Length: 194
Image (tube, rainbow, N blue to C red):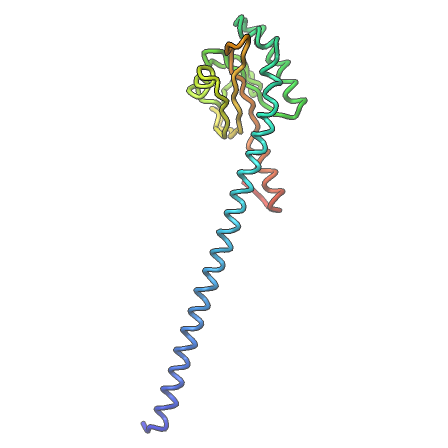
C-alpha cells in the first residue's frame, strides 16, 4: 500500500475515532442530564408528598381540641363506663367528621385499651401501636405519623392525650386514610399515584 493511500486512511481512521469518542461523550453527558432530571423530579415529588402528609397531619393537630375538650367524653373516660364512653365517643366522632378533620376516631382508655373505634364496630383495631398509646398516656406527648392497622389499612394518624383536671384519662387518635394524600398527590402531579 502506497504512502498516498495510507495517509488518507490514517486521517480517516483518526476522524472516525474522534467522532466515535465525541458521540460517546455526548451520549454519556445526555444520560447524566437525564439522570439528574429524573433525580430532580423524584426529589420534588418526595418533597411534595411530605408536604401533603404534613398538611393533613397539621390539619388534624389543629383540631385535637374537638375531642380533647369534650367534657362528656372526659367524664366517661374518667368513670370508665363502657356505655357512657361509647355514647360520648360517637358524639365526638360526629363532630370530628362534621369539621372535616378525619373520618376515623379511636378512643383508648388510660391503660391504652381500645374503648371506641369508628372504623369497624364489629372488629375494631387501632392504627396506633399499644406502646405508642402508652407513651401518649404516660408522658402526655402528642404522636403523629403514618401506620398500618390490623386490617392492613394505611392510616395517617395523630394521637393525643385527653385530660380532665390536668390528669390524663385517655388517648384520642384521629385517622385519615392514606388514600386522601394519594388523591391530592396525583392531582398535584397530574398523573396517577399508587
